[in-house]
Length: 357
Image 1 (cartoon, rainbow, N blue to C red):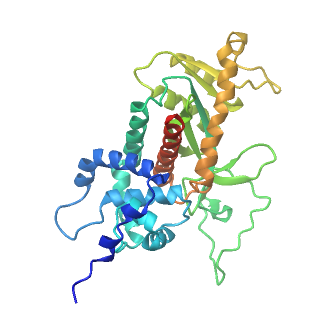
Image 2: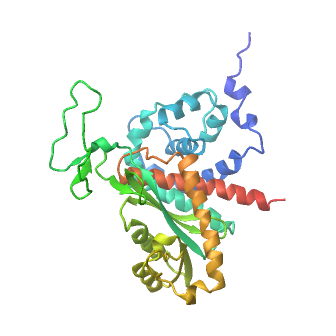
Image 3: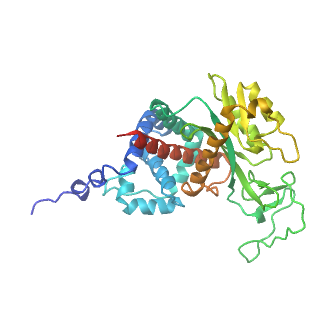
């Protein structure tokens, strides 16, 4: 009897994925970005010792986790083992053995130190610019709350030792009637999480704050950022995001009522940016006058700025980031940036498909 061909040679994943599958254009963009980062990948790993999992495959797998709303890396590897589409996207043949889910944890610190999420995001944004999908103005800034991976029971006084859990799963904590402030309390699970209330009548939660700077024409993310949740975090971060737009002409920046303060409006004008934020006239006077609000561009900016809610909606539902999957601003910010890159990939694909014949 002759030797039979391996299964991967008879049924290669590339031949099984339809040519019009929506993941194909995304994989093409991802491959181009990863090829441009190959030098950085090589510098991250030693040439000696046991061969490592190629970082390009790890990155593609993490993108699949975002794109297909897979809630854990353990489940991601389970699906990668049997899902032909996933194997094709990552670059595995049908015979290749998948790696253990702990590989992601072992490589996370290496990825954090090299800031690969931000660099990868920049490569995807550069592709959008090459395709003529990035406009140089106008822009929108906004922020949203990302729940921390910590319970309210972990929010304890900083100078008090953690209670003994005893025989139960969780310690008995009675904080009713106790005044709990970020200045005096901290989470023992995630010390960088902050107790924050979205508005009057809303419950306070331990959370972070995600921010984006969006270009209005096509709704693409220009810069993502994750910070601590504070009362001024939206405006402070927006100033930094606008200030980071170097080598530019005068621009316009839209926003919601939270940005209608005298300090923020003056800060934007000092950055050569025209503030076109929604007016907040509830019990106060708006920082904007008729010279701005009567301009035709103001109404357009206020209409287009609502696209940013689509970004946050996608990040929290499809990207599964309503609640952070990692502790701390650094790790959470890394995942927030990667999820923003995944959003731009989907958005670029859809825009390209809309203009193609």
